[in-house]
Length: 422
Ligand code: GDP
Ligand code: IMO
Ligand code: MG
Image (cartoon, rainbow, N blue to C red):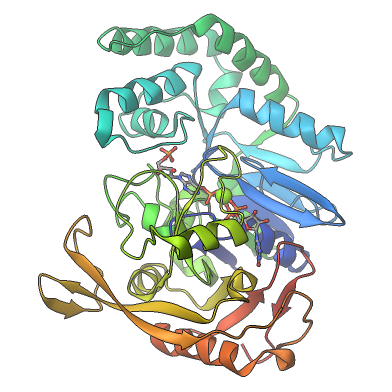
């Protein structure tokens, strides 16, 4: 059996959490492979809403095993808060949530370093989520990190050495902090973490496949925030693309099955950085209002614009997407006309190839579609789709060369239409 991968094709918040939850019944194991509590994955069902940050989105469908993989960075304090909230709503995960020993720990000082680096950048700041993601991955790559497995071996010594090193770095910044208060929470988080089973997840995952079970890997962030291919430097610090599932779980490339590429029927971005189809006008406001486009974790307003097929085509190529999933089409239900960016004009030249730098001088070229002006939120079958909606999705499929397998028409688990031919 293989690992199917579900990942975002835009700048995050595409609706990954919702769809992982919907797909989970077909899998034995759901696992996260990169990112950390910078993620906010929202799920809605039976009138309840949950936002998950480090815990995989497969936990609400029966007793499936969920794994936090080796490519993830984990903050014990935030993990504690997250699982305690789940426990309070009747979801005890200790028997079915496993954590890779090789996942790296976000230390309290990583969060401080994130804040210090951002403030030193001034107007050039990335607009990070402030969760210490960049500094933790920096320590991993520079071979200074602490891993979950270290909790079992001489932890205090390694922790003290790392904190001392971080304090020294912080002393070079004009940045005031109070480590004691956050350290207390963090150490309580370590005690909570110890209630969970630490595993050598690469062995567990490969054995699970060899025994004939299916695994779903849940991406965090999105392709355009990828450290290699995203809008650098305005990106996150991990491999958000499909290849990240290989390194973040320890599965070989030939063990990857379907790649579900998920995108909104329009586009959003949080934080700084270029966004060619951004709408700084009443239409952008309308998208934000109708789509409730405010960060699931930070509450920051998300920047909104039309769908960018040039960027999506690039993302489809990088990930080897086999099935597309289009989210939030209901947000466009009332629009008279809808636009899709089909090319960029860069220095007077038209191109469909995503360029090296999109910071300046990129003019989006749009194709315009008639709106469907129909409330689609209660539809149950693709046979009910209006003609204009079909024209929109047919165009996207043709442009990207990949079928749209699922259409999401509302935030609830039930507002999901799986297309029979795709
Ligand atoms: P993720 O980070 O990719 O999991 O996405 P987020 O949870 O950050 O953002 C997606 C938001 O859209 C959440 O508030 C979801 O509840 C909501 N959502 C998901 N699918 C749909 C949909 O089809 N229609 C509408 N209106 N909202 C949706
Ligand atoms: P989900 O999984 C949207 C963005 C931040 C910032 C940049 C770097 O919910 O889709 P970081 O804290 O990672 O160093 O911030 O990446 N970012 C996200 N944007 N959704 C996310 O996650 C994001 N995670 C990080 O806003 O621009
Ligand atoms: Mg999100």
